[in-house]
Image (cartoon, rainbow, N blue to C red; front, side, top):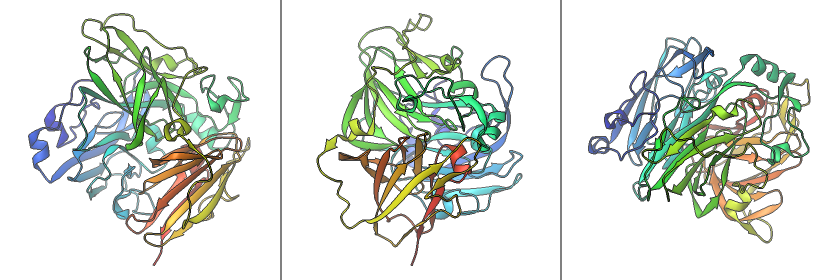
Length: 477
């Protein structure tokens, strides 16, 4: 977790671990209209904890891959060399970009074969905390992901800023079992979370993945270097959940977090909470003030016995070796972010006037089944959203399964306007949103004003996506 060198904003250096401390972009980085990166995927023996040797795949020799960063308005050119041993692509999650640059095997491009190369070039948009990852089966779960920050020149800079990728090492045997719906891995969400409503720790669902280690920026506690802050500073955290299948609950002991952005997009009204609830693929920007000297744990919360590994010390100078203050591994009684809190509740129905409505029922997932469905079908036989340019669309999800689903739309920013029958007073701009299990509902509203093409809409729990919970938004005419 060493401070990033400014010249690394212009190129991703091979073997460099993702940086967390973010100084301002250098004049040299800002002077060019085109920022160039090289990303090379190779096998990596990943061992964040003693005794673990995981057969990973990495961008530029590190898991996560290098932090990529540009100023909004700059173009970027990323030359991808695939030496991973398997076909791969790069999907630029949260970006509005040309369809041919979206990085989806068989839809926007052929997969890049092992030994092949591909050049991605576009102007990263909109500004905010974005990320990138492989979109071919096997690469994401093995470590091919990283954070991408598009700086907004209009924003007031923080006194200190850190980029934090929460990620995990899966037991690949349980991934294969989960694909068949016969995994015996237990539910490990923290007590007090919505996922555990009506359930008990260690309940088996059939689609759960077991994890061998839990990490932040490639390190497991206590081996990671502390994030050093100073009394009086306002600190910005850019947080990404790059887990393969699980929601993350994240808390900084002894502090209130002020959430300003969801999936990189600014909230109309910042929200103070004690903890974050971050679905797979979601991002939150959260700020806190350092009011006194000390040491505190920023940590993921769950009932997994190894969860203590997913933590990093935040401390003031001189407290690097002090015992940090931690948090209970439960969210019972904890004020964590929800869409209803972030958007506020309004009376009446959401404003969907003029919108072409689509109703999707999320189903499947019975024990022993390898089918996760939309309206009773698995991809590519799921119903598709057909749009013409500038058409307004609403998508209403009803979740009939016993698992939450982080639904992600490529190439667009949508607004969440309804959650579980409640209209949001301030619709939330997002690209990924959790639909609550056991009858939960959620409604999107978006305008079809992205570049023409075929854009995936899918569950970002990769077990569910690979087992069929996926469709497309297809531009016609």
